[in-house]
Image (cartoon, rainbow, N blue to C red; front, top):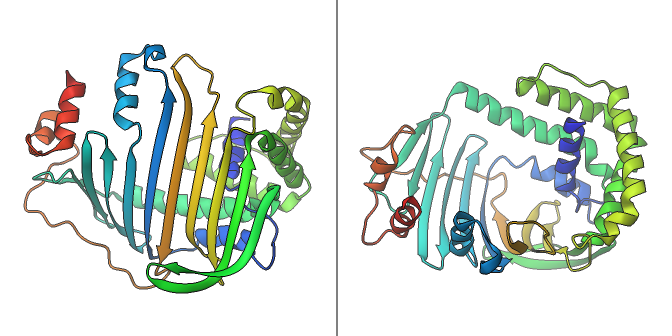
Length: 345
């Protein structure tokens, strides 16, 4: 049952998939995301935590919340191929900006954080490469199995329009979708119902889960009959609990995901803007809500792209101590240096 829950949670992440609307094949858009072998992209994310400092009793958690609240993340990515890529960006905090860079290829991964004098270099093992390939293959198998079973969100509109992507005008479609938390249980139930009606999709998911077990060192396996029975049990439990779920503060219209997408004529997602709002969190931590905004833009899909290497003459290994890493940072200018010292006290 745990494996079943894992797979269903992975599927929920793709909940924006649905049947074609006004010429836009959303299923193909999701499948296309697993077929990108090279490209460039940028992403910005910002977030706000809702909490009462007096009610956060864990002082370490309070320090983390105060540090990360109202922060912004900027990321630019160059993907040369499935094994070679570079990332550069900034984590912008109220205390200041922390720049970072990463370069990865088939032999190593190089991390350069906050303009450190030395990067951290970690060799890439053959096992790591095999795992990366397996994750990519697993993602494709799961996506192909479930993409057509995802139900339509109630609130979705499509308009044929052009937009500017990285300075170039691109023809395509603008999509606006909204999913409210009170709709999520019924969407998930509809997804389970759709899966149970398709033996081929069930078999593909069972094969994928058994491969997952094997790759993670779990020798157990699941049969198609066991998976089907587990889904039926989940289906019955969800149908029975729907009235209670709708009474929960978390499953209210105050919690939602609103997104605007721009999809090109080949059904590749080129731009997106998403707003996630979660309030009514009821726990003892003192954190009661989270607001998240994410914007993305993608270009040069499956075209020649060169990842940016990080040049260095000396470096730290993954075995470097905290003190050794701290010594690579500028005590006067490094924001990260001051943060690490404050948390170490």
